[in-house]
Image (cartoon, rainbow, N blue to C red):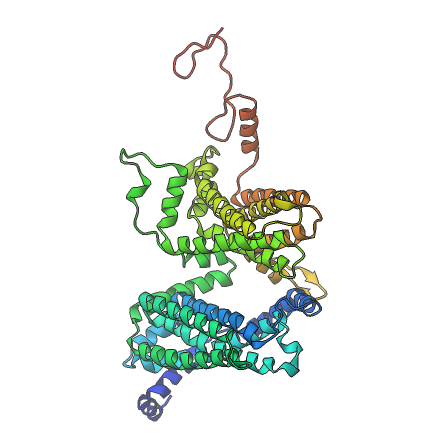
Length: 547
């Protein structure tokens, strides 16, 4: 770059930012053509193997949600819009549009450029991409789950497209808002979104003109996008660059973990730090509290995760019950799958003891090789919390749907219990995951090419895959006892595979159980029975052991 070019660049901040980004993009460390080609290839394989059959199945069956009129579609559209805004806000708190590569952000921060000059351009470009992606996702979901586009003469399709465009406009600015605004302001926005969605849904169900509800929602979304976007971009100039640097460093580390195959390590970087209630773990006399009390206190030390569990577990239990209580309904299987997925996610947020169990099992030389009370101490709280919360939600839902079909209360109880056992087994399998096994990287030669990337993808989300597969198998079985036994068998396989991941052998556990069932004492370590003392010898405390 010549001196005249440097002088010309320094005269315009936008050109200076463009020059820095151009130099950074051509540094030689970016993605190569081969990397992009492999990404496109893997996406095509996943689409052909997983997405295409699902799309074909959905389009050849009756629509999940029938849209008869604009008045009936308005509440569902309001719910989708509110969920999109809340999800965008939450995503912005963890990984917002202003997150950059740490080196690039360091270069910008150490210049005389104002933050708005380089962060504003980056945010605008990313919000455009996010808006297009949101529009594509919402449009695809509407096309697959509803019959909105099956009746072009009704006039609902253009209104649905307008609502999708409104969601695609407001969700990206809510994403930026979630990053640049405080927690209190995000909470106020979430409450305002809930109030506005409720009001528009009620007005849409009233005596408005035909299509008035969807048009009103589109107008509200457009106004909200304009106001939120203006306010969020004004806040870019006051963003805390130190906090942004920490977020960028954490995002870069998480991206490295995800690329190298250890996605659970990447997610661990975003786990909240426990705070408060340290003295509540012990009694006034200094002794530790019981297993359930310790688990509850540790869960409450991360209030955000505990709140998410308190929402997902009852909702999942209610959906589970609705799915198994009315098997003839069109939404029964999706409700069952969604409920099992909700309980699966909530079971991970219900307690912080899963990781403790994994550490104690994988670090046996440090903590000792005993089986003893390790599972009981660590699994008592999550198992009891999931079982009790799902049981209460399931019972309350069953009372609202009384009388029950498909085998009555016994059949529903067996199916719900089997689903919960399946979810806990899948959660145990996921939480016992350590590093990426090198065997997964071996090539799998097929007519479609190397499918080792698909196997790595399945390994990343194995717990969720087990839940979905198990629920679909249970749904196809004719009897509730058979489905419950199948779920129990899958959960047992998950427990066995989870223990294999930690490197623990099952022989000591089986030996200990055999010793306990036979009434013989077992050793504290490894479950090895004590050798009987010879006659006439003293015991461990000096007492005679002979006849």
